[in-house]
Length: 259
Image 1 (cartoon, helix red, strand yellow):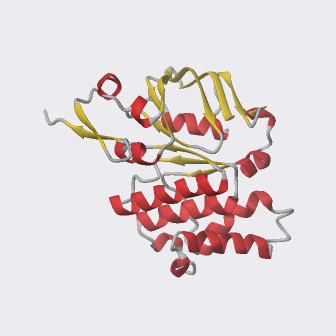
Image 2 (tube, helix red, strand yellow):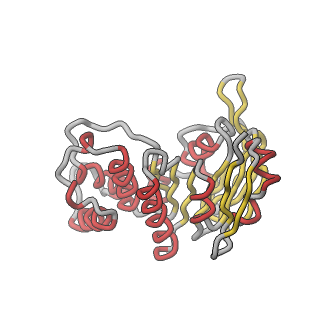
């Protein structure tokens, strides 16, 4: 059953058109990867779903309701974001930053965080091995550590949908795998939907239930990793010549050919 449905979405910056009559759907309780070359509209798509950007035409439905019918607070209870980076208040601790995920759920700003809010933040910190950093100033963390803090904040927000914009771009391979394993665990154990913009095709193959490949702001193809990650598709979309091998779980592994 779909949780996000997009029909004939158009968006551009001035005369530069980014999304072109884009139509696609995303099913509940899946980890979905958004793929495509630089400039094809991946991050722009996420920002339109969030409402940070507004399309010139087309519709976005979230949980069977038109996106623009939600208030920002209602949408923040439904969708969380793990961005590539975030602007920080310099004096904010990791614990305080993660607790910001509870802001959409506060009855009012005067009441402050409840015991339950703090328990959710503590659980998220522990699950991502961040407990030892909770009193640290967030700006003192490495890029990889801070990326896990961003995921902890999204987990604490406790939304049905988590959007991730290149979540592994600042991580070494080991930490990238750990982060994607955590996202996959959240999807499977808690019934969340995760949509991740990814550049690493092999990570996408290994962890995603479904892949959506964009080209020039349009849907090029959609399906399982095995259906999407073919030599023909990668040549057409990325102009990439490659060999593809299949591991023991039948996941495709892509080996680029050096020119």
